[in-house]
Image (cartoon, rainbow, N blue to C red):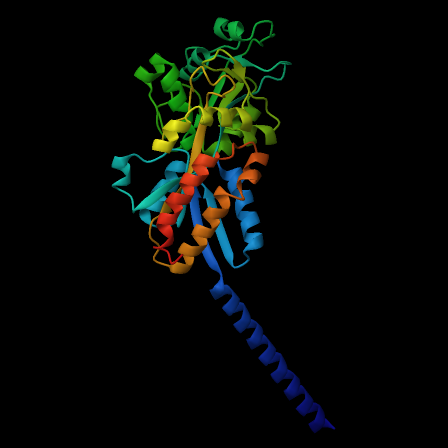
Length: 355
């Protein structure tokens, strides 16, 4: 009897061992067959990117995508160093900058409004801000919410007697690039003293890293004001200001008003997708003036054919089926002309990535 029990235990142990080895082998095989893609960059596009990645992975379980929301400048630098497979940026690269990068293409992936969000609990009506007033606030020449310039923009609104607390980005940021490009275009004083770019020398305010931090600073500071992508404001129940456009109309940030801004530059974008779409002409009566395109930076060649194929597949999803998802998060979908241009640009990577 003891011998029989001993034999049974030996057989059982062997089965357990074989099962464990089989499972481990299966797990290793599954892990090795998973394609892992890494991207980094824009915080502006992060709400949409998170949804795109989740939805794409659901339909493509063999692909894992890790996107790091570290700011456009950080994403560009990581792509330059070769530590990520793609980058997202709200600021494009000039011809001179492209010379310092690996061969890549710049694809518009979406667009959206940079909204001006604020923390003024006593206000019942939306705040209105003209270009001149907005430039004055962020340059520090307008310091109090009862300033005449603000009162003139928002007549009849009971403004609080409180200091203005400006919040801005500290790191290299595409959102900053869009916002300062707008201020540079509408304010000669801003143009002469501060300028535009991924990072500027802010004359006033508190700094935070990422749109998440700027939103947090505004939310916790009564009298606060900052610039972020619209989804960050809406998710945190913060109001957004109406901005006066060149047509003299007060326009709220939305995917529709951002689309109107893009449409105003249709011909220019066909010539060069890097054309800024801020401060559109007066003929674009419904356009929100602080609008920007956001881009994917894709290497023209991939050392790993499997990565290249799956990255191209993901980008193809983003610029086509993923556009309605972006619209749900207040981004402006790409117009048909830009989608067609993206397809041509993406085709240039297909033959070099095994696609």
